[in-house]
Length: 413
Image 1 (cartoon, helix red, strand yellow):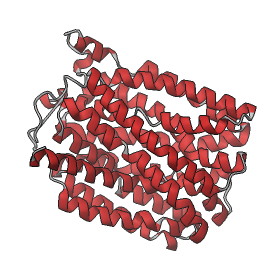
Image 2 (image 1 turned 60 degrees about the vertical axis):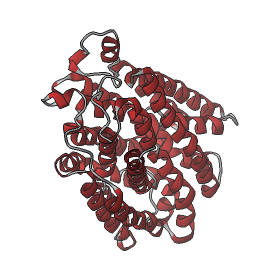
Image 3 (image 1 turned 90 degrees about the vertical axis):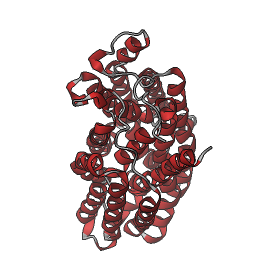
Image 4 (image 1 turned 60 degrees about the horizontal axis):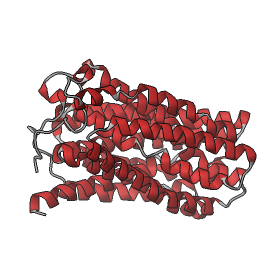
């Protein structure tokens, strides 16, 4: 491996560290939800609303951060974003009650909204289509790895020191990784455009990218239903200690990360992103129904099915991000990936409170089975036809391109 290739993989690694850090506070707060409720005397619905606050903050700024990345580059954008997030999280111990906590979590997420989209832009710029699925799969491993860190560490810190003190860990990580990004990351060449949008014009003039956004939004429901309420179910529904439940769910994050990597490698091999994404959406629907049934019967197998659900529901995320990036091209990648994150954050902001209310009214079995409907809807929305037409040599629908054809212009590294 030559120096330029090593640099490409090193930048991917640093981008992953940035995303892992943002995930710890953006999606890791559900792992300390029981301690949050105990510290502030909140109901499950109220605590779910606080946990959903980061989604609101991220929603407010993601597209703005994407435009900043498209204009000014990845290194500066990620560095500033992480430093600001660290400052907001560092103020949590001084928050005046649960409303103050929610505001600071939302502010930290608003400041850190660039990391996911911008690290994806690094992948699009430095990896060609033959390796991009694998590279994006590696990058998308950041979320389950970040969740693993959160599940393993945050409950123990919260049990000992309280909710807000536990959140000082991601605050420190934000600042540390920001320094690393500033030193290591190099922005990809600006001329390395890929995908149909690189030929000129907005990718949002065509339907394909909108459909990928929509399918991804639908698949957030099963993912967040499990990630937010799995620990609560084990503690309140099965009588587990929070620390034990956190360790189990932390262990589930590694195979979850590997499924994203495998999905990316699979998509490189078959030259398509959306076909594999549809298959995984169907699998998520089946697993959601199985989890609801196991919870309803009180079967001892419910824990195993819950772990499988935690693994499977994260698997298609990287495929969606790769498809969006390739449909957009490098000139629009920051904004398109930010839009992808925005759509997902809109749903993630609603899911905790909505599912919490559903659990309160009807119990865990109904809440765990309900996401199957959203996964089936995603199967119908995913625009697999554009890949089939391109594979047959015809013009892709809506002028979009399949993953293998998009970005064949060569590897800038």
